[in-house]
Image 1 (tube, rainbow, N blue to C red):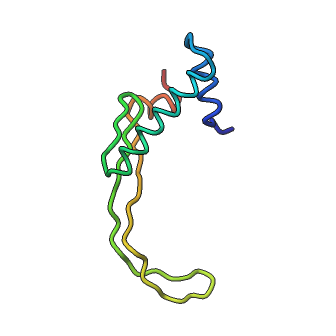
Image 2 (image 1 turned 180 degrees about the horizontal axis):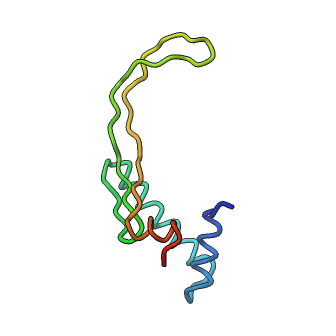
Amino acid sequence: MTLTKADLIQEVYKKHDLSKAQATAVVENFLGIAKHSLQEGEDLLLSGFGKFSVKQKNSRRGRNPQTGEELMLAPRRVITFKPSGLLRHRVNGGE
């Protein structure tokens, strides 16, 4: 099962005294702030949840798995996630 953006909106709508449009705006605004932060290379720390970080990957040699042809992979930025100790504990069955 996957939690979707629509599911998040529904949960915000149900748990808070907001209209469906307000709940949608809250979720969309949060996601927009998070996206902008990561695009700017800033880390995103959500206490009790985890930390999203932007890492720089250097160019490296690779190969096309279909043809075996060697090629150079361009440098790029990747997003990593490290869960908080609390989240890790809860995922593993702790309370």
